Image (cartoon, rainbow, N blue to C red):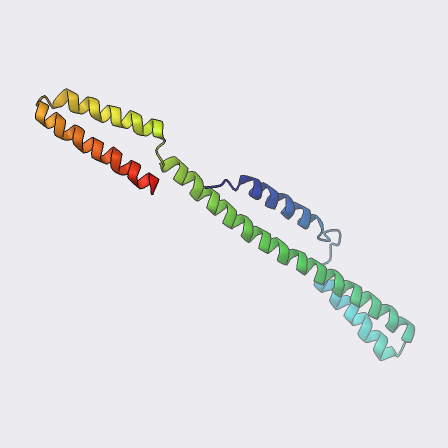
Length: 148
């Protein structure tokens, strides 16, 4: 399996970049600003003041555009976080599988340990020969499976 650590790091970097785009300088939320500019717009309409109406409209649309931009950025952040979650999940599974897999050196050591225990406790030559044949079948069977 392929490591996803580089992709995770890249996704983390992208999340940081995207979050920097959000307008955090305003202490007032876009929603509150939209309510304020909406009230100014309503007042200009009621007063039938075309200059104020034009300014209020421009300000109101600017606030809505900023809010929409922030919303799109947060949507992208959500998608990136989901992508990161999937990558981390895949990487975790890969690492777990890697830990559970015997290397050929580990398998060789295990095979030698089993052989030593058998030679130590089984003295009958006929039984040892049967066990050796069984080991050969296992090893040859694994080779056949690997070549398929």
